[in-house]
Image (cartoon, rainbow, N blue to C red; front, side):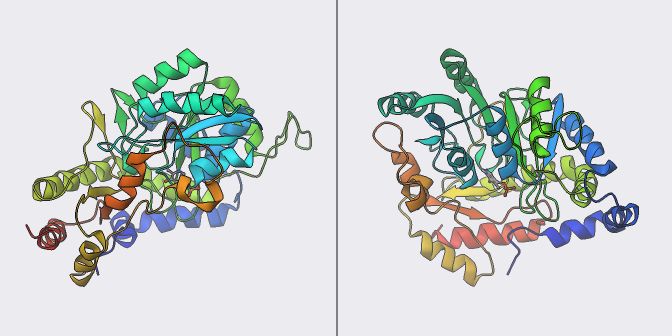
Length: 374
Ligand SMILES: *Cc1c(COP(=O)(O)O)cnc(C)c1O
C-alpha cells in the first residue's frame, strides 16, 4: 500500500540534521520555552511577513487563545463552516458562544459569501450577537477573503483565519498569516508543515493582541511570574517541537513547489473523468489534501478499487458538523447547508505529499481512471 502521507520519506530527505536538532534540546535541557521557541517564531514571521507570531501547543489552542483574547462569551455568535474539522467550532462552544454554521462553495470548498449574509440574519433571529467569522482554508487553499473582509468591516466583526491546513499559501498577493485580525495554524504531523507531535501558532499584526496572547498562553501571567492579569491556560509549544519545525521550515518552500507539481499532474490526468479541485485566480494552495468530487459515482466502490490496487484514499469530511449529535443544537445559516451536505457525499482525497514520485503519481492516476471507467 502506498502511504497516504509519507513522513518517513521526508525524514530520510532531511538526513541527520533533524536528529541532531532534537538531541541538542535534550542536551541543553530547556524543554519548556527554550531558545528554539523564540527562534522559530522569528523564522515563521519572516516566512509569511506577519509582525507577530505566538507559537502554542496545537492548532486547537491557537484558535481558542484568539477567541479568549477577543473576549468571546455566552450570547455571542461566531460564523464558521460546517464542512471542516471539529476544532474550528469546538473552541467557540468552549467559551459558551454559539457557532452559526455557514455553507461553502462547491468549487473551492470554502465559505460562501451569500451564506455568511444569511448566517448573520439567522444569528440575530435567534437572539444571538454576531461577533466574528472564522473562515477555514480547506485542503490548503485560502478562503475568498476580500468579500468576507468587507462584511466584517461593515458589521464590526473580527476575522480569524483557520489556516490549520494552509500555512505557506497565498491570496491576492498576501501570504497566509497576514490576512484578518489573526490567523491560527497547526503543526499536527499530517499538516503541510508538521512537527513530531502537537503544535500550533498564531499570526497577527496587532501588537496589543500579541501581548494578550503571550500572557494567555502562559496561564494569564502578568508582569511577574506568579502574578496573573487574566485567566489563561498552558498553551506553550514544546522546545523539541520548535527544533523539529526549524529544520522542516528549511525545506518547506521546496515541498510546497513539489506538492504543486503533483497537483498539476493529477489534474492533467484526471480532469476529464472526475471533478478536480479548482484554485482561484490569484491564489495558491499548499495542497494539504488533493480532493476530487465524484458526483453520480459510487464512492465506496471507487475507494475499494483503489485500495485493491494499493492506493489509499480518505474522506474529509464524511459527516459535516451540523449533522453531528454534539453540534446539532447550534444554528445553520438560512435554509440549511445544501452544498455542504452534497460535498460530504461526493468528496474523496488521494495520496498527497511532496515525496510522491512520478511513478507513484502515475499509478494513482491510472488506478483512479480505471475505477471511474475512463
Ligand atoms: C487540524 C485542524 C485543526 C486543529 O489543529 P490541531 O493542531 O490538531 O489541534 C483546526 N482546524 C482545521 C481546519 C484543521 O484541519
